[in-house]
Length: 182
Image (cartoon, rainbow, N blue to C red; front, side, top):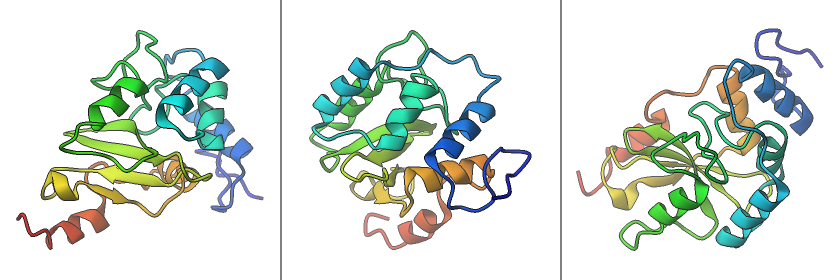
């Protein structure tokens, strides 16, 4: 399988988890990241969420770093002293989203603070880690959450190929025009 020399990712979208781990490591090699998380850190988060962590995400935390990797720096599983959002760790981010006024469906976990109140979230109930978007800027908090229709692997591949949008996802921006709160 041909490998993209720039990103280290296989040019075919059907990359393996091993290839993605290597590509993510290469992409963040110049960042000062915390050490990898421990298995105890993973278990604590899984217990809090009530669902197992998707295997690829678990491997990224255990084999790359306890936070800081990814397009907008994944939140750490436990406070490492390096905050990658306004939250010290994923537990705090999860509790912040547990607000009764903006509840998340069970198993949906905030993963990355994209800035401007936007978050990338991941579904722990799916083995491939289906990705979700939280963007209350598009119309209202009632319609801020939406699935992206991408697995974690596909989402990471977009980042590694530099095809991930910086702002709102284009399909989300278009659909927000139909929001009754506008």
